[in-house]
Length: 337
Image (cartoon, rainbow, N blue to C red; front, side, top):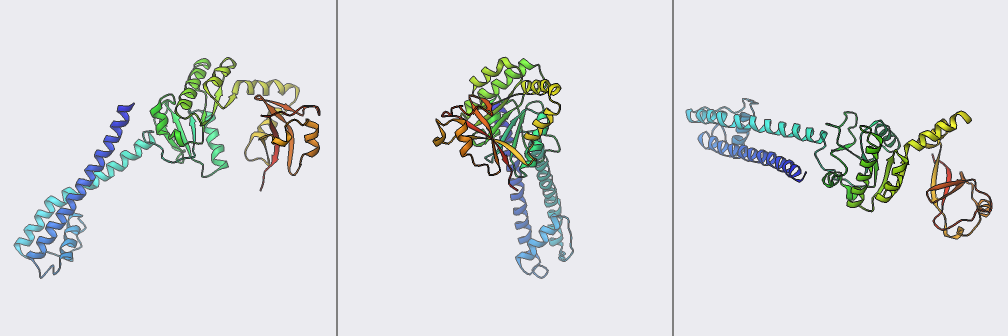
């Protein structure tokens, strides 16, 4: 991977150096031939700038015809300029166009590093990722997202606002290209191209690598099999999405309470009027009972649903439920217009 990255940088540097050399050659040709024609035919080209203008117009094949050499030496100079300058100018334009196309293609193929900060890194391309990107874009038009995936050859054409990095998230060099040190959040989706156990193993390896490179980065990971949840936590995942558990729970409650799945989706959608939040329990509330908290609660567009403790929610607990340090409040909030 290091050799590949070094080769890419070297290739880009060589292209830039070629363009600089050609541009320097063009300036020298314009300087030499412009000065020469001025001294050969001072009557036609009264100052140096007229000579430079004639040289530029000639090698660019524009040919305005406002300055035309009249002497034999002047015309010979013009022929030499056409034979040398036009070829170099055309070669220069070709190199510039080729460099631009190559750069664009390399960006689409995920070979360039992301240089901004405060972005979201999403690992894995699948239908869940596509919908996730849609929701992110809907919520924030200026959101910055880096997609990391090893199965895509090129970035999908409709994701012009997303930066693509091709490669596995378990490789340090790939994460460096995603600017992992200045990212805001990393989201790891389960690999849909393999079996469930392998997908979870791959996710855990990605978590380990991400946390090894940037331990402070908040990481959300999708885990399919229940047996791998503890390993994902050991790897350092800050938040786990148990997709199989969520789906089975919704399907289990469906026969007993029709429409519950639609209700849950409504609460989770970003374009609804209300949203759920987790808020750290204020220090002055530690030691109180839930009933006391309810009595003092300010219901200004907010509704207290319960307490979040040890990665599980206690919704509508009894009034005697004691509040402890580390608890979070589960709150339903009305969005501000």
